[in-house]
Image (cartoon, rainbow, N blue to C red; front, side, top):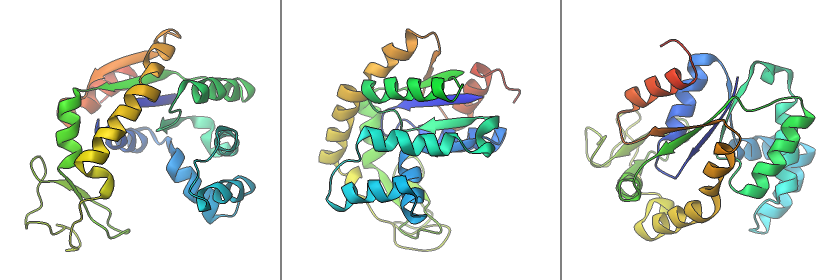
Length: 218
């Protein structure tokens, strides 16, 4: 099974991807994680990507596609995979289509996590993150507060308010998503693989809906 998740920052797609990965035993592939792994392992693609990142530049689409080609060609992914955070725009979606054709693969479903923008802003701005890389848990001042204010429940590190969760940055991130990524909804709807779900619900109920869409028993 090959599944792609769409959703604005704060929609909860990362959480659902992890839950689905654990449930079905599928690889959870995000461009960020793949980039970090490729750089850490000094792969040819990782070295190319690092050249751009060291200069503060975005990694070009051809390099990203090469990175996904390496990942998707691994024997372990024959069972399937979950894509999270890629593609981000129409050009990347078209390149991904060509890559999947090349590898004789196809997307079985594209799940769009729908939620009102005002709720997204509240979710993102209220997030507090554990800086401990081993722990890396995330809390929310309103929806999932820590037992002790600004202290991680699990490792007692001082929680931080990440720079990309500040109000002005959140607004910019959401605008970028609307401009660049939202058009993918129409793109995949035209291919007959899009399934839209209400992401303004409990994580447990959203996950049940995802399993129902994918025709997987709970």
